[in-house]
Image (tube, rainbow, N blue to C red; front, side):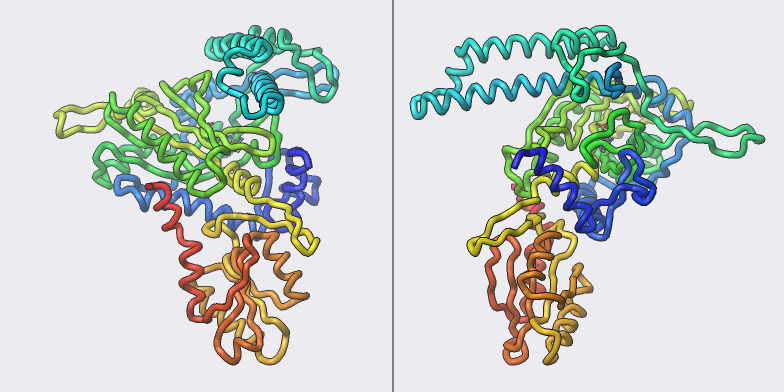
Length: 514
Ligand code: GAP
């Protein structure tokens, strides 16, 4: 199965099992907007808790915030979004399809890396044990040729982005002979800038309505509340403010399911530090955030850092954590050193002094900021991509199983009476009544046990508990584990601690700190 086929199956699975539905589907949907179904919302909430607890519970000096989506329009002038929150877009005249010019070039660069990898694999097969990868990469004429061309394009690209040189971006597309994936032609328009913010009107027109924006990032809600939180919480530098909330961007090219949406959710933390210490904190947060991802156990090789070629208008350093999605390594999270840009600009635009009095230094200054910013939806897609598995079993049957980490699984336990009689459903209900105070528990009495296992595998439930006639005699149940499919006999009273051990965030946090 190709990665493309796998991704299509994953999307279908998300819909079939109540994880994600297209928005307003009965009206044929709305581009790049999605709804989360009964299982999706549980997984999403668990992702948010994993993030929130890792920030607010694990750090004495990080507190939370929930700012409004609407903000004073001047906020977005101060932040630079009105003037500079743009994507460079280009149209293909034959297919009439619109693309992000920077993404077309990034994809071309990624293809060159893939070509090099293929050359290495071919050589590995040819030379077998005697193969020396390092030496091959340094000497193979074919690899050197590809790399030289790639590096030259890469530096032109970085320069064009930094200079906002739209003519050069188009020229790179032409020089690299990039074709439209639909029409297959190189008949491109000029590259133009496109502002990504959605706007609407607040107040009636008769009163003189104000244009307000749907926030394109949650971060600004934190910056404008810096003084409120610092003063009321008596916070001392370094300290952080964490927030989870919706953000909106009028993405030109919304592709790859929930990877790029027009309405999405962010989990952002702004960490305020003394000027001059920001690089040290930026490095620390890079490591902390990578450890948060890796603790989920999807394989360290599936993550990498990617430093930005073009720094945003507010940053002096920026990196992405990328995950190996079915469509390649792509950004899940950004870690940005935002300097004093935001607080400084809000100070200037609002006319209010936004500074911190450092008692140790005996001076006031505008703090510097290190930001960690991750999309909930992208994290969701990361988990689903890594968890979706099709397996052939020893008995020849097939199963689809979502290997979602137990801590994040929508339902933790499914309780199943073997038959719908002999008092077994009643015992099953008693077990549920006890466990439901702590966990999401499902009850299933329909069809054969095998079919019931498959249903729970497909939504990622880590434990299936069967109540049978032996339960009535000795108070034990059969616990069947999702990933290994191993079964064991367990006392009913031992269920709680068994589930607790598996679903508590404790183990993930310990791994993070190891
Ligand atoms: N405050 C900084 C900021 O917003 P960003 O790199 O533009 O930085 C941060 O966005 C994260 O938000 C991304 O790494 C991604 O996970 C998520 N994100 C951004 N745009 C998105 C979109 N259109 N759909 C889904 N997630 C998105």
